[in-house]
Length: 122
Figure 1 (cartoon, helix red, strand yellow):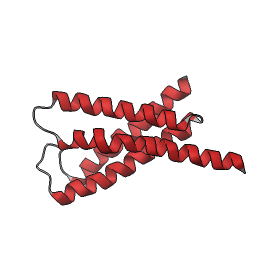
Figure 2 (cartoon, one colour):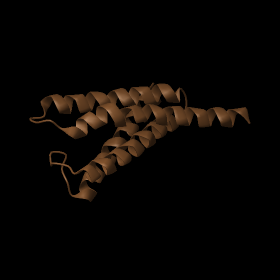
Figure 3 (tube, one colour):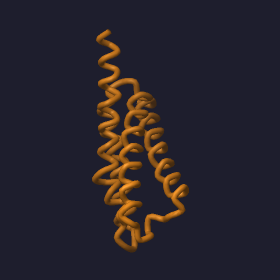
């Protein structure tokens, strides 16, 4: 149980830090009026961050990687929903996080589980 909780926590921290890093590197805030190019870069980066966070969560969990990816996706979605509900204006970043980036954590978990399955088949 502790390993599962720790792996999901680590995956969330990885996802959150990657999001913060992307904003720091770009010098923008989520509230700023984004350009189409900026949104496109954020989408690609967020997809990669979600997949990596799901993969790391599954790797650290060591079992039921897809389930851990699903739990991580739920945590990411809940935090983004809370942020969206308490935001004073429409925030495109929360919408992308809930509907695009969080599901990618499941993809990362599935990817890790398929890697483990191939390793066990050898």
